[in-house]
Length: 97
Length: 86
Length: 92
Image (tube, rainbow over all chains, first blue to last red; front, top):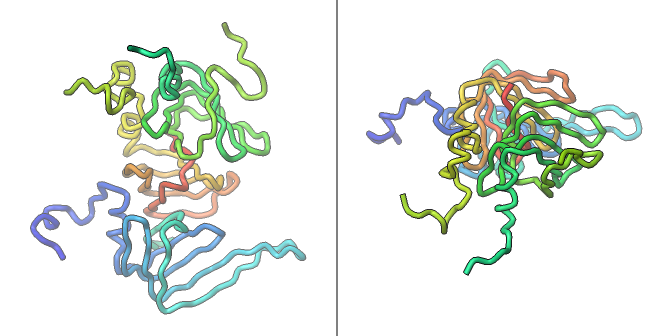
């Protein structure tokens, strides 16, 4: 909750990188993870390790099919999930991306 | 009493302003002029050549190299041969 | 200022680094707001306007393009990059 100190902080100013994540709270975000995984979902919570809690999640896993040498995509849906921060590569608010 | 032992970071400090060869933990190397560094041995390098695992070379004007994945620093060295200058 | 020998003999306060303003934090303030390339350990490269960097080398970029093997693969408005993945930040 915004106390007076937080009020002074212009909500749109990004003075440290994690502010970008803070500004994405309750928005749908795109998260790139290690191991060729991508996640889109609504960001509920995060911490300084980039541990994340997301809801209405679509996870995409890219796998090389050895036999056909194709790039296959596997999609999974989850209502709610927790992402351990060390798997996170990138977080982006999904504005036209 | 001062010892003559050279601390590792003192060696790095002596390299400031001169060419340096950086070997990463992964199969990647950099050579460039060392402009500065910090306690984590994050380094600012100028006139850099990046050598990747496939032998490709990329020239970079000026970079901040993350110290986390550095394996080895070689003062004055260049990948693929000894630096010839005296 | 204290005598400073105990804590960090190689801190930015060393005259050499100061005058050349070439220690990592000085370099970062030089390039903040400018267009940069961020290369990750995976080899993926992000090009965009550098908003800020923190002590973990977490990075915020604006108007970001993602290059895989030198080929433009994606564009993002804003991007947060977790610092442990960063290989280097380059001015371009």
